[in-house]
Image (cartoon, rainbow, N blue to C red; front, side, top):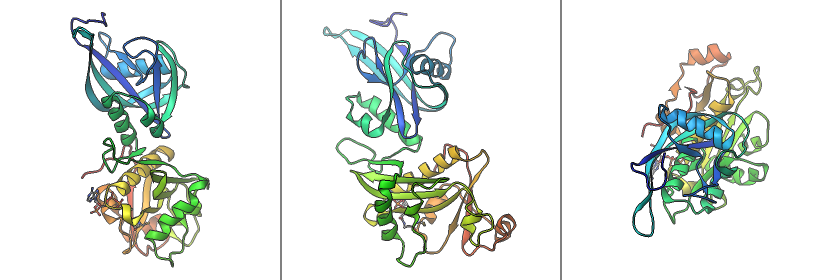
Length: 320
Ligand SMILES: CC(C)(COP(=O)(O)OP(=O)(O)OC[C@H]1O[C@@H](n2cnc3c(N)ncnc32)[C@H](O)[C@@H]1OP(=O)(O)O)[C@@H](O)C(=O)NCCC(=O)NCCS
């Protein structure tokens, strides 16, 4: 197959492999992108489906066994020589992929392969559509929050797992959105086993925080949150940063990551009190309100507020 000055456009398939807030990029050994970081992928072979090509190329170039998830986009890659002739012409079709096995190691025509965070990707000089499809891959995997649509020059909000150093800042979010009398300091969940804690960060500042209890805290406890799992304990966004999509993205990320961390068939629970301003998020994400009898049968406790649950089937999708 003639890659330079082709007689017809070639079909290229890319694998956007996202895991733990990082994406795999490879440094190419040959033109047209020699020496540059790019999405693992290659040319579709005769008799192969697009998804089969994504799986094959990912394995060949990165050593990772992947499973294609959603189609992220279709792009033109047409490069001309100095005389204006078409030197390369690809139609690029990119899939978000999940790793199902293998360890990262460069192979085939990739000289190097490594995991990049979204912040690191932002430092690379990538073609605009490459950067866009990687951003989309992060977003679909629930890793990147783009309340400002991520367009150039606008600040971007990133989501990452909270670390101990975020405890104070997450506490500020909690204290700004819940009354002083609220009994729980959810930020203290950060660093505890069997919890999922995510922060939304804008320009280095924590602007949102979500905390999920992944296992039953105490099956005989007095509170529903101790007897239901996984359980969404808290979500909050700083008042000045609300209503621009951060809560929705943080919530969607928490649902998707909880689904990955909990056994298949799990349901995510939460209690909905009148002071809770997240009712819209819950409704749009498909949570259903459980009957009081159902809660009693499941937990042995009478609910004080409204209990909602969502059957976890990643990826989560919102109707807007
Ligand atoms: C609930 C909470 C986390 C939502 O965070 P958020 O960042 O404002 O969430 P979003 O911006 O994604 O969505 C909020 C609303 O803004 C709307 N919105 C989103 N982007 C928007 C935009 N660009 N312009 C205008 N509105 C927008 C959404 O449609 C949504 O509407 P809804 O309230 O009808 O659902 C936040 O309100 C909060 O911290 N509340 C206090 C804490 C709390 O009660 N937590 C739950 C119990 S622990």
